[in-house]
Image (cartoon, rainbow, N blue to C red; front, side):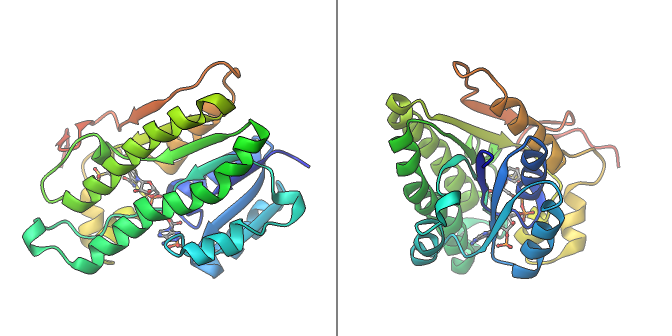
Length: 251
Ligand code: NDP
Ligand code: 8X3
């Protein structure tokens, strides 16, 4: 059996690109997401390259996480690489106008979902004294921007949890890399603006954003480093972006 990588949120964007790249790097893949049709279509595509186990569940549900990841078939149990990618932003309003449902979705997915998945997968890595965890943070976890309130807070939590994991995994030789991108063109803004495609498109106008494949290249670089080398924390930006609010746009 090939080495196994688990990528949460592989039905689109960054997770899909990472899964594609890890298949090319020779990993067998466990891919997850809530949209069954998309996950199964992607799984069929990937199976020309590698063995794939698609699992449809919501990372916000501890019961679903434990049901799927706590009861893996024997040959899929030894996960070597975990990519905690599933996540979202919802809304971009001042806190006093924010939608409570948006807040719940972000906190439950970005923070609690990452915790549930990690709590279920990490004990196997600890027991085997081997593994690699990638956490998808964000520039929003390093800086706070106007109206980013709860999304920024959720990604600051990922930043803090990545540091905790790294310390706690140290005795077991498990690598922990947090990847903090700036603007990557995916379904992200469409989700943030509740399906308003026009508003989503505006985000990426006038400059060249990152692609999911740019993040996948980074993951491939990291997993191919020598055993004694780990990139702990990476901020990756489009060349036209200096920080969370500063873009050079030619419109
Ligand atoms: P996409 O919206 O394209 O992809 C998000 C993925 O997460 C989808 O596969 C979605 O699958 C999955 N997902 C969302 N909620 C859940 C859930 N409750 N349970 C299971 N899966 C879920 O966005 P990106 O690829 O851009 O985002 C990936 C990660 O990168 C996120 O953590 C995001 O915060 C982070 N990021 C994105 C940036 C960007 O500019 N795009 C920049 C910095 C960080 P499904 O809907 O099928 O469940
Ligand atoms: C996504 C990037 O700048 O919209 O995490 O927060 S940003």
